[in-house]
Image 1 (cartoon, rainbow, N blue to C red):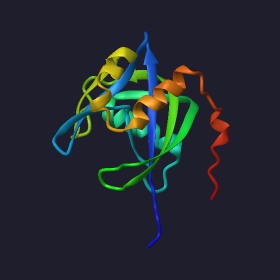
Image 2: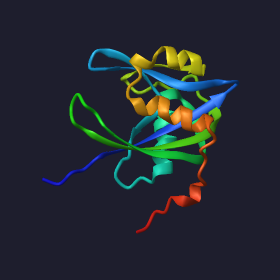
Image 3: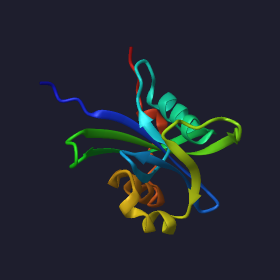
Length: 148
């Protein structure tokens, strides 16, 4: 059997000292996450993070840097994840756009609010990405190469 991690993207967006987060239901539990999701066939990482942010928050996201690449093994189901986390800003919001069905709401939270919800974060990658962003991790998007 070939090992294949789930390739995901996430957007870290900060505005007025608050971060754009999503509240979602996973297996009947309410959890918090950055706008994030899976890379789809034929999609670049940048296209994926823009699409996921729009679908989950109705905000148009402009990635500006790569914060980091994170590998995590979920201890509950043994699924492996490879997350590419991007920093950037929102360009515009479409308040009439419906959100993905599993998303309860998009919400702006301070770092303190997020830390208070640590037990309700979707994975440890959520807080790690924010801490790395706050430390100044910012790799140029040119490190990403798509070859055909």
